[in-house]
Image 1: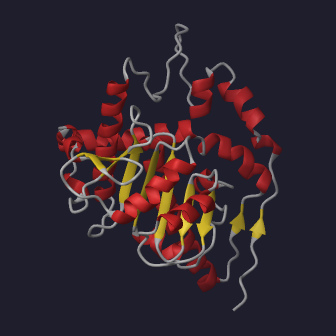
Image 2 (image 1 turned 90 degrees about the vertical axis):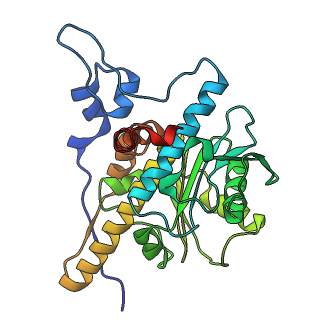
Image 3 (image 1 turned 120 degrees about the horizontal axis):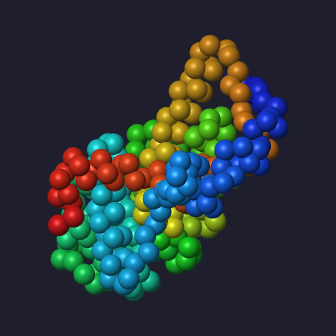
Length: 302
């Protein structure tokens, strides 16, 4: 059956990013503008949104990254992104920058604490920790961290909607505001060769990722990256939800005969600057972190 035609809306000049900023955010700091935040008080104070902290030492930053990595695992567990020993999230070490932290192979995501995390070097040697890691995690993450110095974190899991959509081997349609987080910033790795233990395949995945924030691994699942663990984890949550929405819309389109409407490039391009930046990804993860902290009483911090 031939694919159904789709409609593309006409760009609206009334919603240009210049108009948006001049009418709503013109008096805000650059940081607030990037986050879409209005923070002016009546007495003239400028309230600031949350952003990646500045640290007095690299040791402090290492601890921060490990705390947010442990939280990301807990959050993935809450959303059903765990499946046996599949899935892994990494964060680059700020002191030994060619090393990264991973989860122990056989520990459930919901149980991971800061003290459980494993530090591995670029050759796959365990530097800190007393448990083995996932061989596929090393093969994929090591090559991504090597190819992308700007990437400090990467997430991969076998989430239900991600792996369902991956079977089509196609990119997402730009049909919702949330999908625009991935506008011209995601790709498809169009082959499946079993569990990834070969570093050369890890290199090929990194090549397909390019300078984007996500790659759909055909017949496998999703992988996202970010300049913080916070952004990478939020991109994964959002990408899985976007795959879910795509599957629902495609099924409804086939069943109803109604045509889906895509967002035109002009609007998608400037909307990406509102929803797809690394600063916005960091900010969007903070409510999840706060929820995890409250639900666990901070148990993952030990």
